[in-house]
Image (cartoon, rainbow, N blue to C red; front, side, top):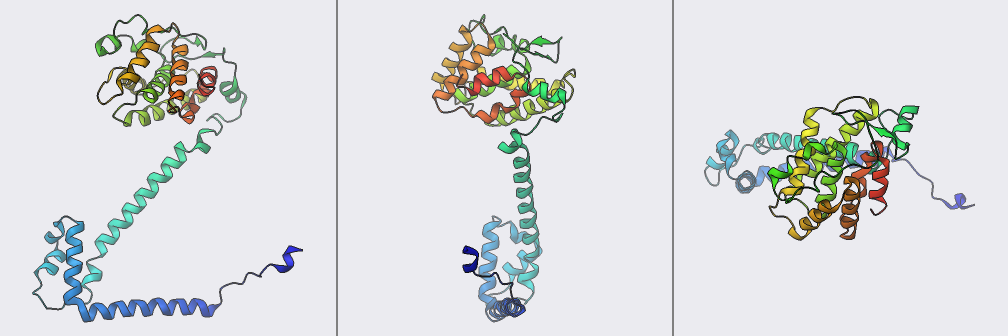
Length: 301
């Protein structure tokens, strides 16, 4: 019944299109006439704007010398303002295209819809078992034989001072790569690092590693990936520059008291949640490696 009262949709008539075109050309003609008549004044204004937006570097270009060297009161060539704008137009176009590409790249890799998509192996039997298997299933440690996805010894418990970089770096190789990534994220959420590049680097490396192992669980991870994961984990634990020291002390207290690394990470996740700093999508990659630990993190520790 409601369709009887809907206003019919009409296509734009040719007359409106022609009218819009005529109006556009008329506007351009008027602007051209204004430039022709007032170029001695408008040229000075135009030159000032170009000098300001380029921090006076424009004066060293050919058109810059033309506009700044014209005697006062003399008219500028009619095509000068158009030709001199071509370079800026191309630069603006390329810059806009670059921003668009970076936005598309970020959207295609980090958007929530991407994070919750199927693993790289698809929904084949191996992919389903890898993503939704029991928390007690076996996982592959890239440097050693497969280890159970159960308890993981905490190598930091025996250290006297977790602020001592030299002492901490002696045991970082004992931390499986996925626990290093999770430890960085929970530590950074509780006591954020001043350098914010680490979080992006960790997420990128962890997702690459998870995707690689989803396709081939028996493959070894590249050394550069392991270096990134463990290097940033070390920085998260020991770097004191610009940090919330109370938060870092809490992190150290948790790590120094827990026997199991996964218990420590879950406790840190709960601590970050209490500070409203736990971002659940950061741990989406973990469901392909240790869904039990991911479940503990995303269920408030």
